[in-house]
Image 1: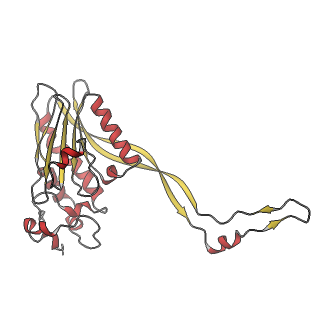
Image 2: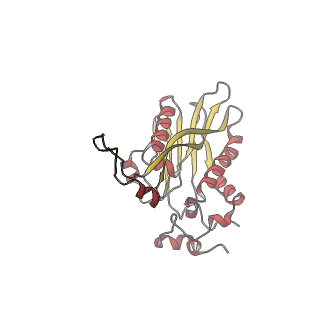
Image 3: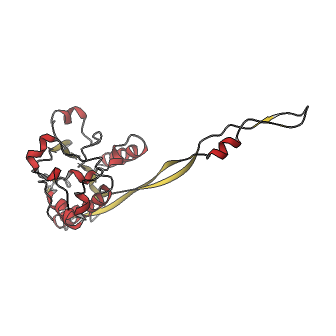
Length: 260
């Protein structure tokens, strides 16, 4: 079943669907761009792995709470010991985070020319996960690599390497692709709405080589065709990805249609 949307489908943003879509899109982008890079370059899927602390609360049951009442222990004249009140205990567990991304490398020397990221919801969460993402991005930039950041999430703050005042000058838009070109140093922004197809973007290579043009709609369509589209259009229990009323004219009845 083809997608009812001209470009991005907002229901993919649902937490039950996004992780599968994200990994499929990474693989599809590699498949589309690889033939255009040969023989000097290659696109390789990499993974960013790190640990974050996960807090799981363990609430005491009534009997435990009642058993922790203050009481005195010891005989007359002995030192009295007061038991502690009941508390909520949190186990400190480490959670492994896996985030796939793409590196375009020069085959002869293994130099990383360009890094391609598809932004995940966790990259927008303030704290360790956002810090890890931004730190690795700056490492690429400082080493001389260019960056392509693809943000297909309408929710959350922008984390692409573009100053917020520059993005604000382009509003309104729903999605953005940011290309940060190392040489010459410049930012290129593709801002687009739900009513538009995904853009064709210029992916920078080394100086002297022409950019390769990646039509993002092609890998997106592959993901849609290969993935369980019934999940993409499941309208029950929606928490993310709702269409605004003003967008309904642009996308027909897709926002109100249930995949039956």
